[in-house]
Length: 86
Image 1 (cartoon, one colour):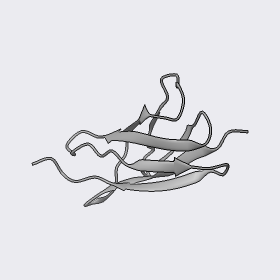
Image 2: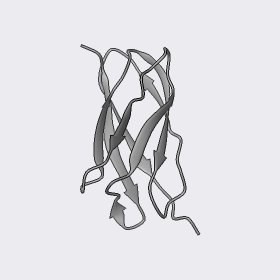
Image 3: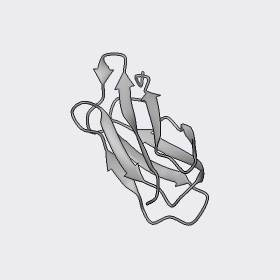
């Protein structure tokens, strides 16, 4: 089974619901993999296997974030903090 990337997206006020998470780069060609955060700001998305990933995290009213994630044979958790736009 391939590892997954999970985490929580927060802003200055707490969890950010309906943030969009996409894979910008991966160690291999990927299909369009994306996720939306729930009301609690949490998300889970699949991977194509171990390697370095760059995610793009976007939400209305916030500046985009591009965290880098190193995935090994195990699931990875990443917490993303967004800053307000303006």
